[in-house]
Length: 336
Ligand code: ADP
Image (cartoon, rainbow, N blue to C red):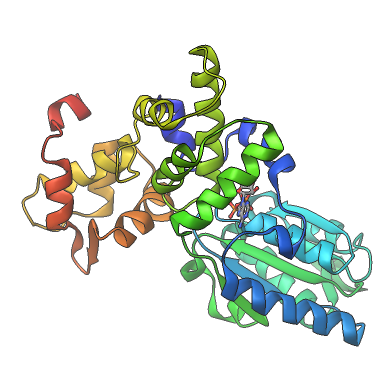
């Protein structure tokens, strides 16, 4: 179960291989997020009509909501190639130069976790985004000199879970800024049904609804629950995931009726124990044994959205609803 809990934060390697099958390829296959989609469709169409590259796009939002999927769709709809990399993978300006100089003209460069780009690389990217050129310093000391590389025109699609960490000059270089929000359960139910069709999993309407309601507004989790429920059903000798099997399976995965997992509850218990005194992020991280950044990126946005946690200038406070929700939890049992 601890693996399930940890992977609620990020994609597991198993997720990543299955996600390739499940990923919508076109705007029409992408479920929900109508506002974002409608805007992107217009920008893509306009760029195609002009025969020009699309402006750089920044997509923000919690993990698992479809940022990578959208980047791929944008490239598909532009009928161009996409190169995929991540902020932490671009350690040195030379890493960036290697990628940029090899891009096909008009293609999409997708940088996931763009808030984790090193400052030096980020500054090189400024000129590449604005003028499609790169001034690289080669050699050191007396023989150091700057070489200008002309780049093919490209569209940068950046994805981030922490838009606030991007320097403002960097943010300002994106012509399009879009934010993905947690999905309503109705959209997740559609996603669960779509995925069950692709993966050949039989799930009834009520069970799909239950999965959708407990998947914390996140398609990646809905898809993961679906696969685990299939495992439970198959091993239990059932050919269809019905409501009973879904309820039983989600309980085994530690997901409660609010869609909270064990880590969400630990966080709330840790804060609720302080009886209304705000608790610092560091204290929470140490108490629950999770990275501060994961708590901020993954757990808090959902708890805030659910009205269970509030951020104040002095720290985090659990709401009355949260205290009520976790009152039966035993701190000793959780942390012991
Ligand atoms: P992110 O990049 O935001 O972490 P991904 O794009 O990797 O999220 O999406 C995770 C999984 O969820 C993918 O397999 C994709 O199939 C599915 N998914 C995400 N958004 C949607 C959507 N709107 N419709 C259908 N499936 C989706």
